[in-house]
Image (cartoon, rainbow, N blue to C red; front, side, top):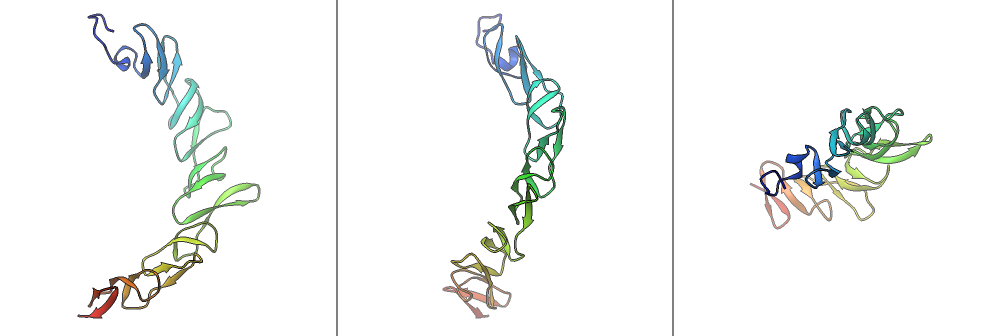
Length: 172
């Protein structure tokens, strides 16, 4: 309650606070830490949670905590997230898969015809003009199919100058 005996948002009473009473904050928002009776903003860029203003315990996606805890450093550009160092990936961007190599997890490029993959030979989805087989390989659609599924002649869309008629591309 505020001075007018009306309910007020914790954030209005204590900036950065999620749970409070009239005098104390108990739970802080992301990027704030509890310094009773209020919340204080972390002083570290890309830090989601800190214990004091200059010690981060959780960085934003795409960043990792540097050894001192006072900096959130960016992950390698192909890592969606990383742990302890820029090139020790925990998740990869599309078109790459996670592979344990030389004591760290690295992101390795999928085969060129794969949009996503689980390793260097098994695709989960394919680029335009290819379809995914039951064994996880991407096989080229036969022209005039621009996109196909199930097999190389079951068309979903056609190249210019053709139209789709019940999964078959016919000349205009």
